[in-house]
Length: 277
Image 1 (spheres, one colour):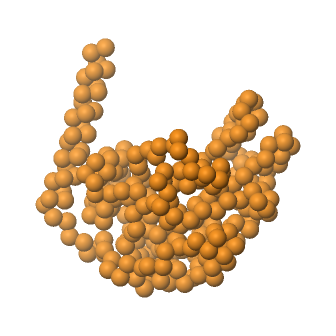
Image 2 (spheres, rainbow, N blue to C red):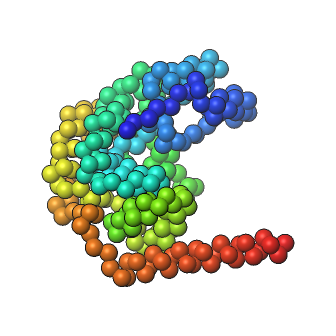
Image 3 (cartoon, one colour):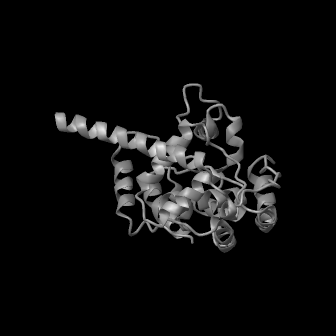
């Protein structure tokens, strides 16, 4: 479900504010996926401190089509938080619970705190068209031009393949560390099995359409008012991968086992180097 961040209790935020106020720099770019869950009253507390110090704050966020966001959130829960339940139940349970997926209302809320003209929404699906990727698109929004000096880095937290997701769900029964999924993702990237900006097809088309229909009015107003009519993709994958009934073959398992053996070998080499110092 939806979690919130209370700046009055989070010591890290106090440290962040102290750092900003003490810094000699005039501009800051602070990024966190946790910002989406901050409630307006807590943002107000944060911005009040900075406004008093004559620091203007702006808010930039990416909006992803909601069915794709939910599938990505599901995979993140599987990869990083030990989740192992079916995706259909997850999507049906969660899609009406995330208030920030109502992008138009969410943007209006942010404007009530940061002020009109200080909130900049971007469509996530537009990022692949930008040669410098998602960070480059954000910098373009800030500066008003392409940032030729910026080079996009290698993706580090891409989605797993459906087969890898199923294997991760099996592993989650035994409470693996987060590093376990890191090895799986790193190997998948090296093997070219996963890339950034993947379009997911892990739920049935009728459920994807149900989610899209639920947010359709919000999305229409959001795109019209904030996105220059550059909207979300309209295509829905008609063929989807049912993870529950997906069969894993010998090659799938062998590839994953080899990844962990190689990672184990690298870790042994690192231990040997440290011991020899």
